[in-house]
Length: 172
Image (cartoon, rainbow, N blue to C red; front, side, top):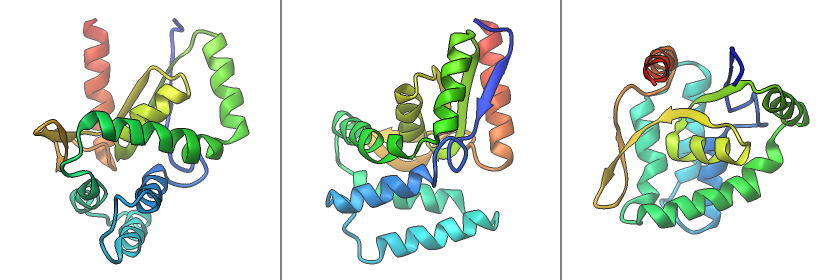
């Protein structure tokens, strides 16, 4: 393993666009997100994000709501299909090249994102990046809830989550 750590953001860095928006669009296409105005509300919240004014709890509640009552294993399969079909084609060629080079050099890599962990971890796995931090959500009755647990990796929360991760990594 390399002596250094390369940290990537996910959205508009490794991929063109925002993975949460792609996931929201996927859920609409798959008939999971059926709430009237769902994509319009998601777009308004993303506009808030772009201005640095998003209420992250509201956003997570919105994108997790269609998953209520769906077993974790089924959601994970849908996420994997979304990553394969809709997110991986958005990975910048330069990002693929850099990841391959760093992997060949034995570099440790981490993705940290303000998207939910279930999505960020699936993208990281598809990119063969071992470490990923996203916004963690609570599990309820064997499925994902819309409730954030821990520090959300949003704005300064990314720095706090990275510090927590580094503490855990150094303890190993």
